[in-house]
Length: 134
Length: 134
DNA sequence: TATAATTCCTATGAATTTAGTAGGAATAAA
DNA sequence: TTTATTCCTACTAAATTCATAGGAATTATA
Image (cartoon, rainbow over all chains, first blue to last red; front, side, top):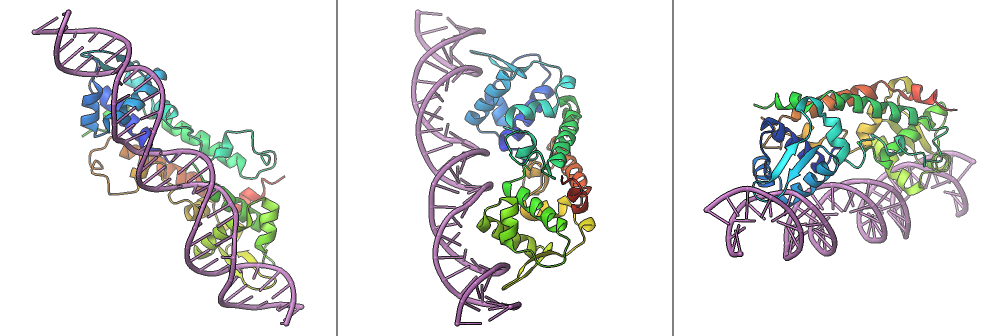
């Protein structure tokens, strides 16, 4: 966080997939057009989501992407953890590499914020988000 | 967020100032040495904090910086709002510039996350943070 | 078998942001 | 007048972000 364009795109695409039901693979071309996301950029994003196991791909003609889980079982946290290099509010919250870690008065706060954000994002499932669509 | 080095430095410096009491101006040189923050970089940060009214400066010999508020009345949110270009979790949460804003299924979530983060950061005062020091 | 539509793979690049660095002018105390 | 400080403006190296480019591999279908 700030969530990158990549993360925002990923979330939107996953919502779009969820909204389609999961009957047949949706080609990247359609997702790209609907959501107005650059085709080649979205390609990279889908690859990451596929590697993480959130979508599966069907290659060749009539190919495309499908969700691997039901929309009720996939949260915003799941998705953003894939695309964002870190969800940590502050760098220091994750790493043990800071020499000040032992005594830093701010570290507990960063850790707590991290947890609060993760808890927040876990509450939003794709099913919730699809129902927001108008 | 992710909070930049600038923001983390700013928070630490403000805690250091609070820990000193507020009897006489603390020169940047000392803050820089204590907190191991590059002198010239910290200079820029103090300028921003001063412009925002969180510290006041005394120029000339024996000069330095002082808090303008009591540590109980200055929160992490106050400080980070100054140094971070935005505290928004996602860009779109702030701006009215996104053409999708009207119907975007993710916008309400970003807005809510924003508010949750702000509420979280408002709970930490400098007084709280100073008491974390060991 | 040929064709068309798709994903997969690897590389490159422009713009922006971040985290500093540099030099000196202005100010004020002693 | 010296010394210690803040103030002001500009520059820069590195990393990150947001893509773009070209073609290879795969699969359905006519």
